[in-house]
Length: 293
Image (cartoon, rainbow, N blue to C red):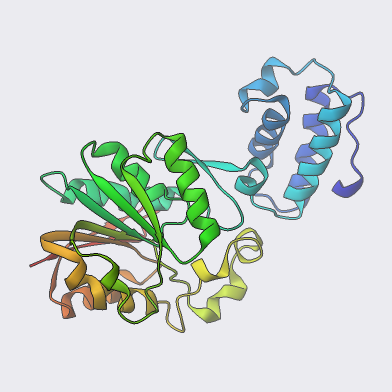
């Protein structure tokens, strides 16, 4: 249906009334809000433009763009890919199909790390950096820190660098290609870090088929699948942590549903003391924070 939508000669308000049922039929959870976001994008601003411009007639160019992006969203292309950006930690991040979309759940990890590290660190390592959102959020709070973001994807690293530049944090952030699946992957750093953070792949292989279409079909699989039990990356990263973290340094992991206890156990068996397991806004244990003793 949405592939053949036309918005020629419609006002913004009329276009809104057409879009909402299309997105609703595509099982979009919040069709009214998302319609406002799409229309705002077409109008060159945010959702607030819809009300301000509701009586204005869409131009031909705007009509064609709206038809295209409503069609994309009705096929469950992620909103962040359509808009090319996502807000995280009150910062705007560029997002592409080569990166995970930053999510509010991950802000739980940032909050927990900030509250468990004192004094402010000098060196931060972010493993599996993606858009760079975790590292750059921390650097925005710790003005004297330097950070390194690591990813196995060249395209993700390019996105992260773009985001660092857009927030004027590229002087304090660098990005390196590396793969914790490789032997001796920690050897590239001669100095330890005060803080290591990671939102690694943690979806068990068998659960991939049940993910939302937006995630399963459009986000990079390498950033999602964490092996048979979802814990492979935590084991591999933790194996290298003792050579990466300064004495008294902190590690922060984002974890999936029902994984907090297992990840805490992995850290404890490696000689780390678990400082906190923190729930996200939905009440799900989402961040595990440990300390090198």
